[in-house]
Length: 296
Image 1 (cartoon, rainbow, N blue to C red):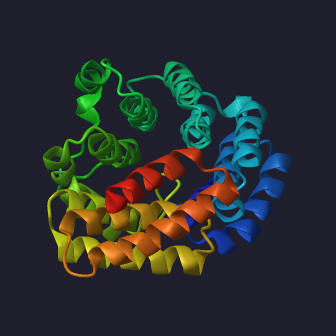
Image 2: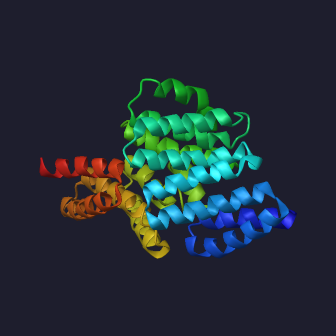
């Protein structure tokens, strides 16, 4: 069984590395063997990998959200770890424009998972991000309760703490706390250096770029955004591309060097068109707000 377990983790690793094309064959074989042997952990790992690869390439928000909930229900034997799929379901809800529903899903996941296990940082981070989107007064209190998940650069960090850092940079930027967001750059850079390419419905490169841009580190930020755009094209990541383009445009607006606003306008026009076609209401609203700044 340890071989089946290792194969399941390999499928997950391929997904987090952004190797979505390789996931299909590996996850399919793991599922076949794991279901024959009743290995619940491997079934969950393979479903996670398969669902992540599917949602990024299909950009089917409603179908992918339903698929995630189906995987949670189908892997009760792996509870409470099956609840780790709920943050991605919550992110899809938020992207569809259902921010309150996303928060409810995030809370459901957190309540189902033992807080002493470091994986719970994924669930705590998602809830924090949902609160930031709603501009909730509970945000600061919730952060104080879970700030122990914030990893320290240069120190070994468990996966849950690293996912928490990704959610936290998005939360900080949503709240306009750019200095605090920029402080997360070393941690996010370490994730990227360790091979993490795929993040919260968008590539890790883009989130590293976001942290760099929050601190006014323009050259580093631009390099990360360009790398992220190359990655999403290579990986066929339809869902991640508008997010990268949006944050790149946000950086260009803040830098405001000659030609930056024209480049930002091109990026935002493409984001708006893509989001309208895919039903990405959250990113669409943010892109339209940035576009309005260009027209002001």
